[in-house]
Length: 310
Image (cartoon, rainbow, N blue to C red; front, side, top):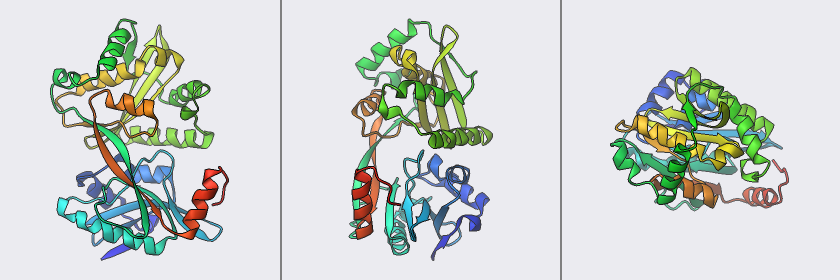
């Protein structure tokens, strides 16, 4: 039987043990990650943690709703056996009965028709590096190979020595010229909390690129038992001298032949998507659900004009 469990009812040890063995696990589903991003996360759980579905929710103006918080690409219905995918529809239908407004990304591709939801499919990019580096690098796009060659000739130094809190400083330095990289103070604080917790959980590694001892780029690699989510940041110098692709290539080089999958995440920004694909990554898809309702229509309408309704 599927039941709704509030945050304080969920047994963290059982939850994380289940997520670590699920076939569609993601860093975003671990309890420490969920606890860091929000106090208001709950889950639907089948029996004794047989299939689970986390989500973040809040309540304003008497309306309780589900939303995708900053720093989370997707959640989903998690299971350990492929045949348990049949529960996805049941989980979503139950969620629909309990919440009037739902905006939710799932790592599940829905082949079912959900009459109560508008379903969109978004791109993601993943690279399996469980093979020799030479084989992986042969799939790099020509432009990326040229960028790497240029970066290697600029005497950039890559190191794991540095301060990960500089991530926000790098993002802010480049966001002045590129609004796609802008980040709010509240979001910056949340992101640094995630990184700090990831290091404590031994789920993170970070590599820094220096130009003449000056930090110009860094990439954080957050691990979920073989799945690595990438968080890059650079300043104008790092961008000009292709420091981020050099760091990612370095990570691939020293981790090739290991059972790891790099998750570049998706992007609706054409340039970012092109960069993600340049490493020979495979395009995958995930689902984005919006509940069909009058409240949802009003929410979308007002959000379009950047007003705060909820």
